Image (cartoon, rainbow, N blue to C red; front, side, top):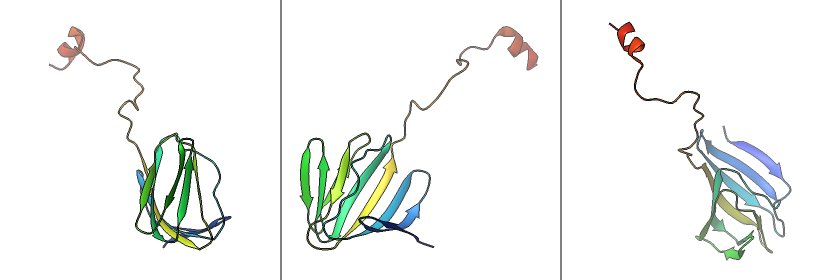
Length: 120
């Protein structure tokens, strides 16, 4: 079942989710924006199906029209906004796998002789 959430800027329909990725359909109202925010490890890919979408980052602004897309990377502060018409987009969010996501309490390497002897 699709999860449907009302937001101040319209409706969000979650189409798919697993541990690494989420796909949503956003039905955006005219002249609205989301909060200025960022994500620690999540990227957002926005694809416009209908209407126009403005995306603002600390580096500037971009306006997307039908069939155009933009990606916001982890830690990039951003917001999206609509203009005078309703806008429909697909948002794909995914997390970056962190190869350093490990906490070691004992380093690997050669086994002490007593552990080798215990295996016999």
